[in-house]
Length: 219
Image 1 (cartoon, rainbow, N blue to C red):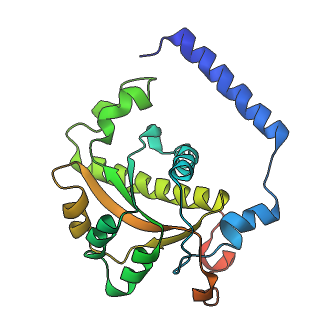
Image 2: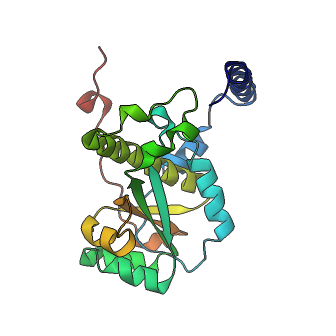
């Protein structure tokens, strides 16, 4: 555990870091927001341009900084690139998704670790939060699933920010993926996402979204 004086120093440093960052940049441009969200698209076809290990490391280093409850960080990422790995993954996919995965340079399995809470002394050093989870399997699963979903979204936005395209997939059998990739572990699959450089010829028109007044309430 970190002593109180050290924590105070770390807090002050963190506060100064945030102030310094906001002094340098307080918002993204409309074009930058377009790249990561408002003009971005999910992709279904891919060029053969590879995604390097260095880029995967950079991608993770960005995505890992997204917030999770109590800094639990339950997500685990398996980057499937090999032909053998893709074939294992294909056995779990709905037929329409097989060619999308086979052709993608990388498919990442976003999973969650049900033992995430055992790492909390490292990840949340202010106090021992492990008793919040010990012996509470429903709470563990809910927290792991919710926060790994968030981390998967951070990964997709980070991928777009560094020039990659993404294609998330939920049309697969989680049990088959878990048996093939995570047997006899505490990991469970959440969803999949293809990563690479898109062939835009597979795109169709953008689908509608709800307007603010359709789904938002200000109280």
